[in-house]
Image (cartoon, rainbow, N blue to C red; front, side):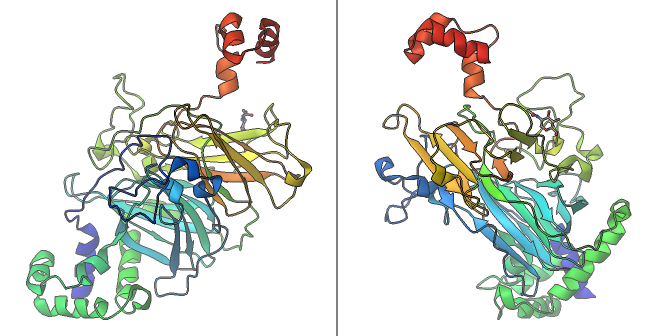
Length: 469
Ligand SMILES: *[C@@H]1O[C@H](CO)[C@@H](O)[C@H](O)[C@H]1NC(C)=O
């Protein structure tokens, strides 16, 4: 019983956890040079002339993580340690696998907001606010396939699969190296241990209980945790039943859903040119108040007292967008306009559907039209970086690619089947400037004289191009 009380206090506890966002990039990219002995904030940059498309690429996110451990979950992270090109870009990606009744135990990311979508199965998620926000409120929500949920930066959160089938989620975090503090491990399993005097006082229990709890964690590694997790999970369920009767209306369908969605993870839409990062949050959250007439950078905050779990939630990312129009691709964006809780959190998510040969890019060789090569991606560096270099890569299922902030980029499906990708962007409202539309389709049009000069072609060609847009 005492252990349960301690564990209850544990989740409610918001210790002095550092909360800081990644700094903004100061150049096109700064691929981590892991070989350098120089220690800096992040990593030293590799010589840009030695950088290739491989530096922005990682593979394997189609592979399920092994959930045969005591908590029944596994996080496969693609952060700067696995994808060197992420250095200075303030973003990373994870795949999380959950066995039936698997738990990703209460933890925080000291440097990142997390946005997550369920690809398969079902997931009970929750986070707890800090001490200052009307006292450690718990927000929980039952998610199904295609749902999106955001965990504000630095707050303690968890995910639990209450179903009888496995669950797969893809998450993105607003840091190249978000860090994870698993609360129970950090408090009871630190080396050397936190004095039992301190912990007894902190949790208002006797030292014997603290010693017992520490004994459960100390001699064991994370993967061999045993008994303490059972009361924790038990407690979690009780807590959830007690606190969130509304979400119990949701009844998980116990059908095994074959994962047929082609999942390619990549990071961005057609092109975005804004070169500044979102500001760091100054409170636990600031849910956008769309009704307010006051104009600020982003949105005015809704009264925190009327904020609900729904404010951090979006439904429908399992639905394919209509790719029938001109470009043969469709971006379904979950930004601050659709998910008010993203305001100030510096991240958002997209689903992109690509019809076969989904973007009219004429010059690909037949070699590229192979069903196992499903998305051709690329970006171009700015003028200052040794002159507009193009980096391209053919991606298949489970591959990850990063498009550095502000650089012009594209994706093209060269295959004979549809492609689906999940992307995350390091802004609540990344904005998109489709270059061709912006240049040739502006209203009113840019003078053909200006464009003729800019593109070094004659005015007739420009007039023809403008007529197409
Ligand atoms: C994208 O798909 C949605 C839903 O199918 C549709 O309403 C919308 O018009 C499509 N957008 C484009 C640009 O084709």
